[in-house]
Image (cartoon, rainbow, N blue to C red; front, side, top):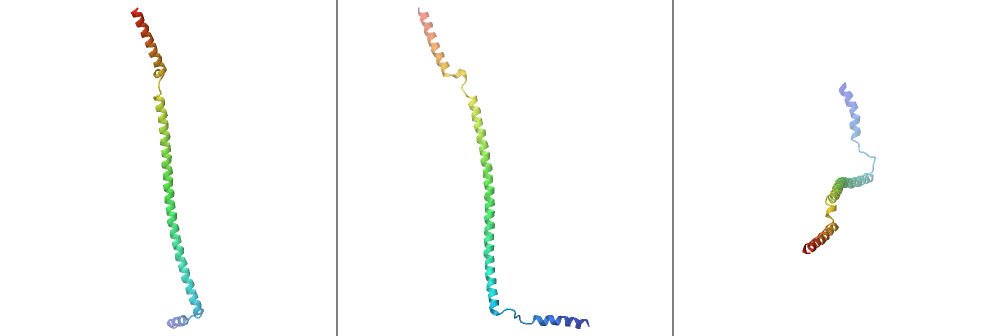
Length: 126
């Protein structure tokens, strides 16, 4: 009994699946096929564009990282140059001529020594 019931239930399924589909004409099927082909082509073109955009985004992100590294190195270079300027200023203060290294003082001392030596010689000779 069960077998007959199963056969009766499955018989309509098998009979309807064997019929020819007449919903579309052959021209409509051909148009649908062409439309699908064009859509597949457009999809492949869009996929290529997406891949190129992803590569471009990756390249730009990499370039952004390099730019930020370069900015960091420039900032370090600026800091080092500023500290170098401070060291130059400190060195100039350390090697600035003292009061006793003045040319005027040495010139005056030389003239005074010459005059005194001349007077001493004149007094010794007389």
